[in-house]
Amino acid sequence: MPKFMDVHRGMKGITPELLREAHEADLAIQGEESVDFQRAWGDPETGVVFCLSEAPNAEAVRKIHERTGHPADEIVELPLEV
Amino acid sequence: MPKFMDVHRGMKGITPELLREAHEADLAIQGEESVDFQRAWGDPETGVVFCLSEAPNAEAVRKIHERTGHPADEIVELPLEV
Image (cartoon, rainbow over all chains, first blue to last red; front, top):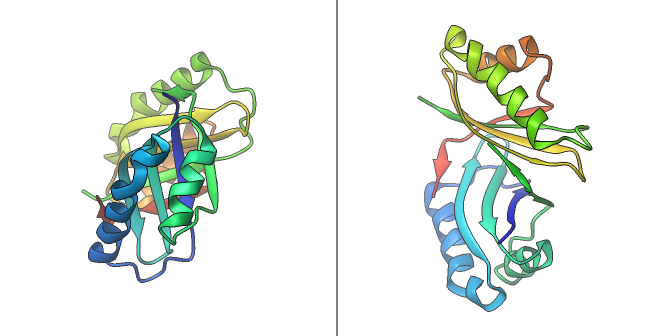
């Protein structure tokens, strides 16, 4: 299953609780698109959040994030990893 | 130790070998700035590479990547993780 990194911007001031809630909202419905969100990292100061996932394609990642109300600004497939 | 995600752009066509070489060049000198590069992911099609690290500060990450010839376009501290 391909991996993806998606990037969200404009989340300045995000708290640990808000990041957890957003991530859990994704986890709750990710199975409907066969996505597996593995990790999310965030920075309240710059408002940038990164999510690492496995998914059939970028469109599946896009759909889940849109349905949970935090659309990704960028979704990058990751064929290479070291 | 804080975590960081750095982003490189413009690496279209990057191969598994080139990503590994770049990562190993970072690993070879990272101790001089107390950086620990943990993982790197890349996409030959968009030319985007993400590196996850632990480091004392963003400046340390910036220095290592600059010295190995692949400066980061963006370095984001990651105080939040789920």
